[in-house]
Length: 311
Ligand code: GDP
Ligand code: FO1
Ligand code: CA
View (cartoon, rainbow, N blue to C red):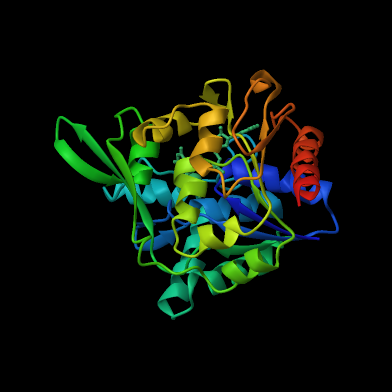
């Protein structure tokens, strides 16, 4: 079976680990969000691609969900000693090597998709990981504080400000002019099913779908999604602040409606949301906490079973 999954960082990566366990024979292609990418110290950092690569490749810091296991921060400390920031983004020594290799290859003219493939040669994530686009797309957030109204990079809003300042709007800058990376549309066209892990609906899945051509390709397929919202809150992180910014209520029903009829065929919600109904979409309730490998594999299996049933 050929499966395509769109994925952000932690929520996407953990679901994918469950999917690999649930469907060991499947050929899985992951289309990764690159809207979170940022250039720091002259290096290109791709947090969501790296989170997927490290999680599936066994190099992730499990407690944190991002960054490398057994990490040290000597380079960051040395940069700080020179007064060189930003200090609010925690790049570790091991992680730095990934960004150096990536930046070197990009400077040599390789597209991000080829660079990602080369990095995965080391990590062997067991899936084909393709960035949504080789073009530069960056999520920016318009905020207003005592410095006035301005746009900041998504990472500054998310990591430095912890989304404590309301987002007036969120934009995937460059998305409209971007093209899907080679292999993205082909993988979707050839897929038996498309899955949306419980990734951030706005700045992960929403950004991937904003690349022209991807939404249309996905819409032709049987698509099943897993809700990242349980009750009236995200399981982890501040996705509620992103939903509020685009005028969408924080609920499993509202996220399904955001993805919309014509895109989503099936939707898994948590048992806590068992009463949820969405017009035209098959909704099933089950435990959605990815608390351990078995629970996560069971969620992935349920998503896959529903997709096969709806095909
Ligand atoms: P990010 O890029 O690191 O923010 O990760 P993603 O976009 O892939 O996923 C973030 C989303 O994962 C958040 O909105 C969380 O609510 C959701 N999430 C995290 N853990 C769980 C879980 O155990 N179950 C469910 N259903 N969602 C989860
Ligand atoms: N998230 C944080 O909350 N603080 C950090 O210092 C931080 C550093 C970092 C470094 C590399 C990387 O790949 C990810 C990192 N993240 C950090 C995660 C992160 O950028 C965000 O959680 C996601 O992009 C949000 O979707
Ligand atoms: Ca992300």
